[in-house]
Image (tube, rainbow, N blue to C red; front, side, top):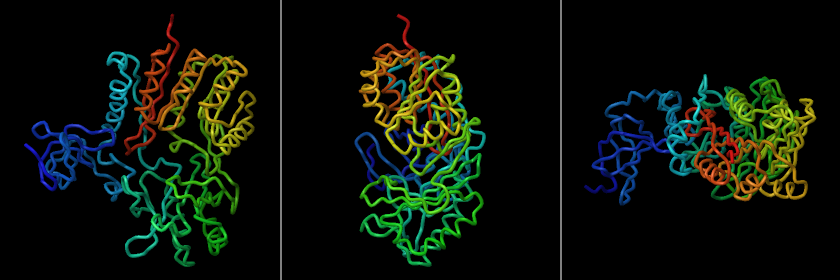
Length: 461
């Protein structure tokens, strides 16, 4: 049987895809349906037809899945942030672990026995809501011309109005209302992506869960002098408990990258601080810092456990950010070397080392895939343990080749994308390493994203 666009079908959701979409089949023909939950029987409208599959839109739920729950957010279906909020949290954890397993099987070409033998129990969250310490709100206008802020709808740049995200902190709403009211009062124009005109592009909010410190950063398509009556807005923001830093970031580029390179402090410090496992970290607007501090502590404890440090090892922490993992490891390592491409992050890492009285950590600015080969060539530095925590695109081939050449005793790979993780693990395991242990850590409840920590060791010859 063939289907055409706008056909209405009834289908059982049998599985869920990597992006959280429901997967159903009718006579062997696959239909992907956003917002479908495994176990649902639904009515869907066919929106796009391919030879072997189609995409459908959920119209109504005929029979509710036992795994379906009532989402807390009223705009979860429109917003692109929470893809699986309608799925019970227990099933979210299973979905994420299966996603990693499937990538290790299909992309990494590991056997089922290898994967199961090395797998450890997934580490879930005690509270899968209200965990984010960072939020970036785009600013624009609705169809009536009213200034709005919220989040982009999935795969679009259409703003879904939302000042009170269920994953964020309660202070977000108060901060956003102050800024929007100020913009309305003084006729400050939000940025328009189509005309490339307007001033305010995004509002960045960061929060230290352990310190209660707040940071607000306005991302502007121009100079701060164009923002009328800044002093009044700053006064209003300073009434919020915990406010520690107010700054602006200038970004006049035609790009999807949110932050530009230029930061100017308007009030307070140019940073906030937070604590993980008794260590204090300084966080600036451009710093990479895990968005879920409670789970970050559990994640780093796994990194430390997998590292199995005895006190005299040389450790290389690649993609080190502001030095969180580096300083965590320094407590038990002989010497730690951190590498990061963002100069401001390395500046923060060095200051974090001073703050925490750490003297056995050294930090370098550079691309890991370029810096490490050059450093190794020049100094021939022995790496007993290497830790990598790359962006979603994974490690560059040149870096993986250098890791193979350096022959560390152990490699701890922290990944936020299991497909590139599986690819990189296959490369390394074909060249002298063996996957010994791995575990999923849920850092991003209600979303399809998951962190994975893997331990690789040199194969015994």
